[in-house]
Image (cartoon, rainbow, N blue to C red; front, side, top):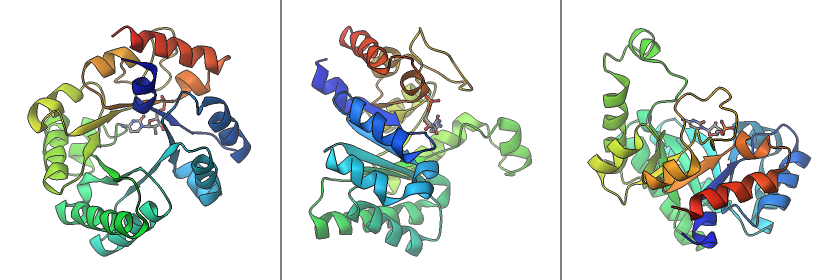
Length: 242
Ligand code: C5P
């Protein structure tokens, strides 16, 4: 895999408190990172300011706001997300097939109206913070979490979404059941030399890509490194070797 192919697969989570910190990450890492992920923390704090900054650098941005509402509201929100230039965004697959279809319709309309790149819409199946016990006892879903994830991923495909967010554990099963073209974006990435932090189901960058991940999300392994460029170069070296 060459450096440009690697860059396209790398998504950096901008999980920082201050706008200036996020800008420094975008400035220093845009030569290495294809897509910057803006989550609720940064988006609720600084809204379009950070998004416009990423766009000025000609990088893609992934708006990670996990929409979950009635179909009409999700359609309109999806329209605005694409109008504002996102390449990727996500919706909760638990919001129903109709809601996911509405996201696709809204995104496609905006993409045509504003002549944007084809939007990539991903379904969030089951949050990794939800344990088997919470699924059964609080959400009152009497299934094992792995089969529940697979059912939700099937619904996402049925609704016309492009893929799902899934850990390296579920990745092979999703690719096997839903086909290699159904996109999987994998967080919980930890190079062998980095701290595990609070992540449970982890994989190395090369391990996740070798298992079929279309995109991998890098977070604290890079943002928390003393020398971020050195960290990302080590990740490139590891992936180039696949
Ligand atoms: O720093 P770290 O590598 O743990 O960051 C992972 C990123 O991926 C965070 O932005 C987190 O919200 C996101 N994520 C995750 N697990 C999921 C879905 C998203 O860690 N199942």
